[in-house]
Image (cartoon, rainbow, N blue to C red; front, side):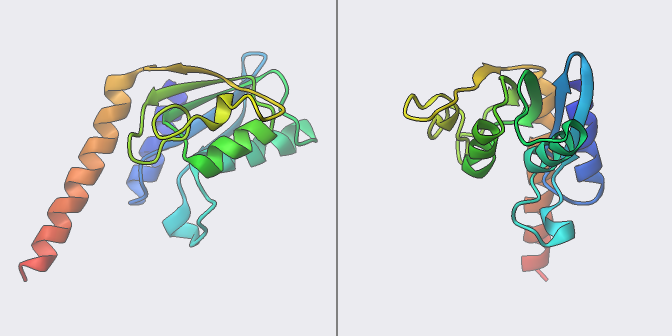
Length: 151
C-alpha cells in the first residue's frame, strides 16, 4: 500500500484527486497508476485503469490471473468492472468511498455472484494515511473554491 500512496502523492502534486494503485504478481509490481483524468482530459484515466493497462501490457494479455491490486481509495463502478474483467484475484483497499465506492459501499460489483469472476476484498489497509491524503485534498479544494466565490 505504501507504493499506492506514493502514486496518490504523484496525483496530488499535479492537482488530481489523490488516488494511487499498484498491481502485484508474485511479489513484484507489474502495474502502477495515479489519477490523470484532469491532466489527460480522459474520464477513464483513473489510477486503477492505468495500473490495469500497464500490467496487461507487461503480462502480454488481459487476464491478470494471480494478481493483487493495492489501491488507496475504494474503486468506482467503472474500475470495479475492469477489475472483474481483468480477473484480479484480490484487492486491498485503503479507505472506503461512501459516495461512489463500488466494492462494498454503494454496491459490490466485485462479489456479485451473477458475474463470472469474483474478487476477494480486504479493506482498511493503511486507512488513516489513505483518508488523510483524500481529506486534505478536498479541504484545500473547497477552500480554493470559497476564496474564488468571495472575489
